Length: 327
Image (cartoon, rainbow, N blue to C red):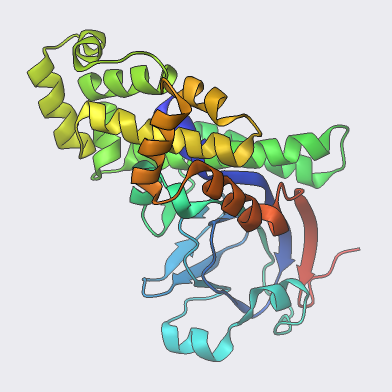
């Protein structure tokens, strides 16, 4: 796979949870920090988002926002500051149940698609870790066309029950995550990973390692893939990625092994072969050096950690808040 796909797959668990919310009047809801990534898409109206320690963000129709680190936040119908949020905000789940403040007649309705992606943050790829607390992607004519198309498809699936919706909805939500990250990378003016993936030499070496992690890579072979000399590859790769090419490859192989331990029942010998280690012993040694535990203990702990939410089924609920209930 490619770097972005691998970075997402390494942490992504099960299916996303989501709600479609229709609300009007005065409302203000708080969601505490959590393990995962949250998102909002404004389908109608407008709202304001205030993260813990951040500045308010205005959200308009068609805007998408990703909270990749599960940052605690408040979302409301009007501009807010920390003092107002502390006074007015009700717990998010309570707000979804329709027990928040009552709607004021005549106010325009707001419609939101909101939800969470379940993430295993114990093996976060640096590309994911580098994402800002808030990725705000405003709706602008001619920009983020793929993201806009995904939002339109989601809205269409939510408007009516169609054959195959149970498969289409979670797939479209996963696609939404990819497009939000891709759009951020397109617009990012700083950050190591957008720069690294935009550099043809570094990107070529990364593409080679991620497409064939078990191959017998050497610095010479990677330099040949990138079409440069060994010193040039080593210098550019290390500067942009933060570690030398072979060190990155070793790290990625262990991360990939951890993903396979978590998501499959394959034997350690099979996993070792898939990620480029000559024996289970060699993989165990590298794994323990990176994670401080053995592969067997890691697998057991991962199973315990994911048991309550293992492969959560996609939740599609329509919530009408305040006086905006529709039959």
